[in-house]
Length: 196
Image (cartoon, rainbow, N blue to C red; front, side, top):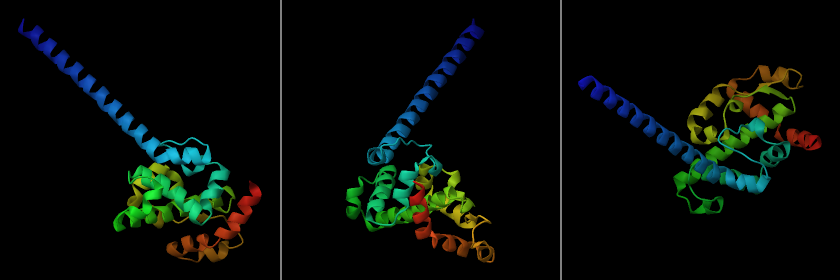
C-alpha cells in the first residue's frame, strides 16, 4: 500500500510539474507576442509588412530597406518606433521626454541598426559578401545591443573583391574597414534606388 501511495504521489508531482511548465511556456509566448506587438506594431502599420521576434535584416523588403537606409528624420522616427517599443520606453513621439541616459541608448542603437541595414543593402547590391549583423534578429540586436555591437566591431563587413576599392580596403585595420564601407553610403543608395 505504501508503494502505491508513493507512486501516486510521484505521478501527481510529475503532472504538477508538467502543468507548471505549460503555464511557463504560455507566459513566455504571451510575453513574446506582447513584445512583438509593442515593438513591431508601428512598423507593420508604416510599411504594411509583418514582422516578428525572428525577423532578420534579410527579411526586410527592398522598399523598406531603402527607406530605413536613408539618413534623416523620417527614418530616425521609424528606428525610434521599434527601439522604444522593444525596450518598453513608450511611443517614438515621446523620445524627447526620455531621460538623457535613455535618449543616448536609443540614439546609440539607432546608429548601430542604421549601419547594419546599410550593410544589408550593400550585400544585396553584392558590394559586400557578409557582415556580422546579418546573423541576428532585429529583436536580438536591440535587446543585446552592447554584446552584438562588440561582435560586429570585431568582424567588419567583407568587401567583395569585385569592388573597385578592394585593394585599398585590404590594407586597412578592422576599424578603418567599417568606416571605409560607411563612406560608400550615398553611392549605394543611388545604386539601390535604381534597383527598386
